[in-house]
Length: 507
Image 1: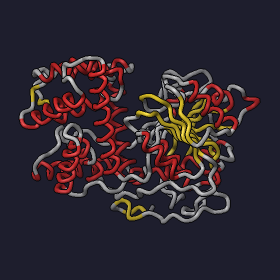
Image 2: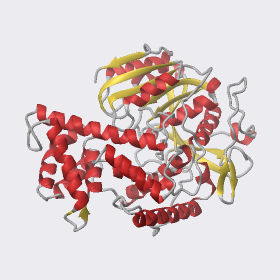
Image 3: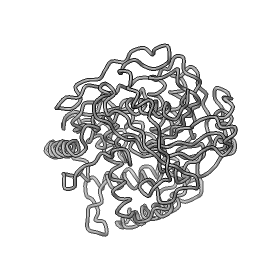
Image 4: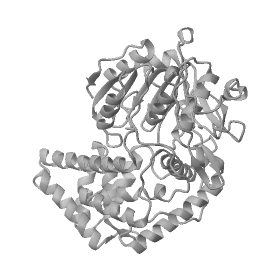
């Protein structure tokens, strides 16, 4: 990329990979990057206050702009837990949790991610905070700048104000964050991973990417096909889908989840919202339409709109554990009491160990939101570019889904007003010469649908697809372990043995 005073003016065109498998679209890195040594020390509270025994942390320096490696640098926070069976160690297994905008150093250091039992024994597990996230030069936005609209604008005047506020907010973030904001793209992160691979002393990159971490892995496949070792992509992002296509699929996936919820109510004989699946869907859609015309009042006096219903409903239908509490909350809301939905939200937070976030957790969440925009707005083309285009897009989405369409469309406002032009492209992943890749997905994944994994499976000639039956996001080494899934992935990571082209594991 070429950085000018106004941001990114263009991207270096990709070139074919060289004989060693590395893309030649960036200058050769100076030895001060490729030959640096990590000074491993005990992990401090800046990474995690509850590190597992033996966890170590350090720093790896990389250039902000790979087209100008002698310019500014950024330090990446990295963590490591060494292989339990050190005598039979296979190398490093690098992990990324996705987000985008989430750091991975803490996940490895505190044992939140430990891989499967066999892989954990044979690999050093390595986590890192991608550039501009968590401990790696966290990008930030100053307090006091205009916030996103709580409710999707409906008029051109409201949309124009939302665009002006968004542009002002984005420019403030750009000033506060510095040069790294223009280089948050996943291609740069993939290059960072290759520096990390070199510094760790591995001839090949062994990698497990979760959710948006699968997109980073795909960029590595394209850039360094000859350097790919064993790669697991779990909860797969489809790189051929642009931002609008992703948003439309999110809408469909949420609608499908509501339909499953309604079907489950009918199957259990619960007719409080309707006696058939279609009747329940009509009840919810009619309620959403009424909220458009006349919002209710929440306990704190604020308006409860269709957008609020979309938010609560979208969160509640992601997991079947929430369904039993969702029904009485919706029944109460239909009778004018929306406070039960607030309690449902608080209960979900408590279930996941969250509860009321601490000030530090609140700041971390806000920073991750900024980092997410920093990555997505560079990686993903095709966000609406004007207030009218956004209004038209939102109207089209609302026709597709009265429950989710308009709200999901307006989630593109950050990238619609981002001050730096996108450098990525929506295109299939091709990795000629790369080692085979293992793709993993749940059958029901509301965040990265199985359709994504199937699409990438078609794009990659040498890949296998492992499908775990059930609902969830991230099927390997999860909080709800699947012996079939974990053993199949570990067989690949440890012995290089891929399952059949497509294989299904029970929940």
